[in-house]
Length: 181
Image (cartoon, rainbow, N blue to C red; front, side, top):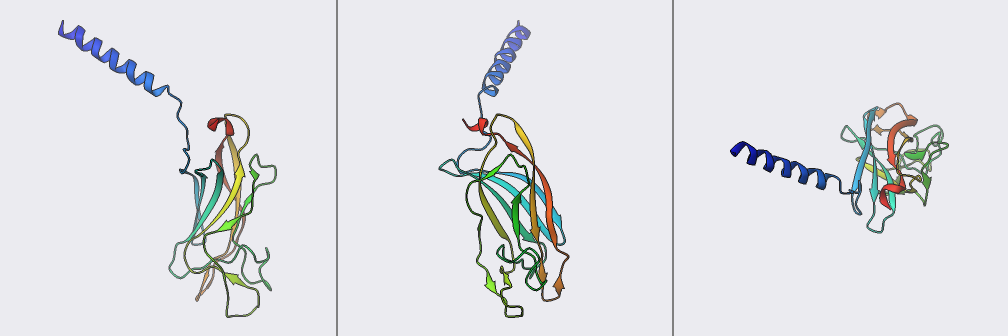
């Protein structure tokens, strides 16, 4: 008899777990961030994330974190080939044919400053991490979509510069908009 009651209790407990696990769950509530990928090259770690704002907008971001003290990155505003060949811009870009669509301008978390060295117009971020954020529209549907996010950067300090990383593809999976409707 004891065995039967234990079996019944176990059955009801499992049934309850099954019922609660079938409830729809949003993968990204307003105000939350979902880390999509990490990559490191030439002494900089890049973290790609998707944030859902309180208003329901989606923000794709890339945080560029130098792995050595004193390393700085260059402004997103300098030319792709640098200024007189010096520096490379810090960029977050959608790959050609991306299912994501830009829905605004890229913003940065820190301000740039003009270098005291030549050439004129070489703007850089202070040493430390920099986050670039791009408002995006998610693809239609209720599927996860394979995407490539492109990043460009170059880290330098008083000792010199690391080789530039240019339009490096970072593979991510992006949820479709159907997950949030």
